[in-house]
Length: 161
Image (tube, rainbow, N blue to C red; front, side, top):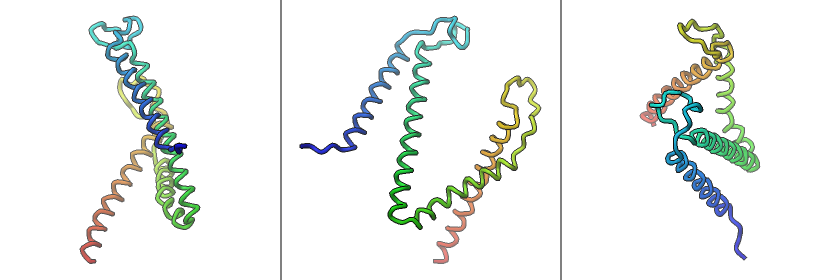
């Protein structure tokens, strides 16, 4: 009896997703144009394929599957690593906890004051989105600074070895 392998399942899933993707792409490119009354922009000179929504939803589904598989694999690897060496696993999580602390500090440092944007009528100029944007920007700045310091520091340390 042939053993059931995870490679068989992942290979079949890959081919199934590839087949669905090819079908949706064919529908997108060769499925005609959306009716003028259903277009995002009502200008008939601008092309809008009829299956644009289907393609976008399929990308959302693939993205969701990718995130779910990544999270499940990371948790499974973490649990497996914890069973082998709990101390090393806790040390490896230190970077994640440091990132969480940086994000919390960046959120606290972010400004919630509404921006003055002439001509902007949107609904995203509220404290939550402003603080979230500041949090991501500050976190990126801190990470870039840490990377530069690490590159220079390891370069200097290598010269002294």
